[in-house]
Length: 199
Image (cartoon, rainbow, N blue to C red; front, side, top):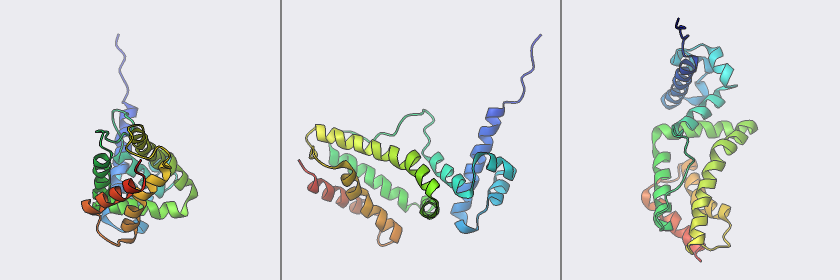
């Protein structure tokens, strides 16, 4: 006698999660972040408000989860940077991609909304560092360590400082809308950083 299987709750939960994260991203892109509510996200996703609150404590937590979901790897692979053996080429590829991402209007609105919340929410800032910023920084540092081993970067270089010289000017230009994030600008940051930390 065969048993009837009940509904696949995990699949339904995953569909709800994806609907909520998509709704949050869409609402941020479409309108003013400060006017978005958990109720609006729930209505757009077709779920009850409590479904959201069971998983996330606030609107900002949902938006952060929506941002994280953009970089989820279904294979569960960790983040790695390209390593062709040519540090300048690899860094230019990555920094150009970063500039292009930050220039995308949809991503721009999402990350600006999140930065607004991080500035005022210490717990969210800590979660952002732990779940997104630190893993990305570690992947970048691993590429820089490879360059140090290959003699392409000063072996005594402070890798946090190298990353700051590469990324902080780009982030500040984006944050203050003080200039375009062009491939040429990304390349110039790589050239300047590598001049400062050549072996």
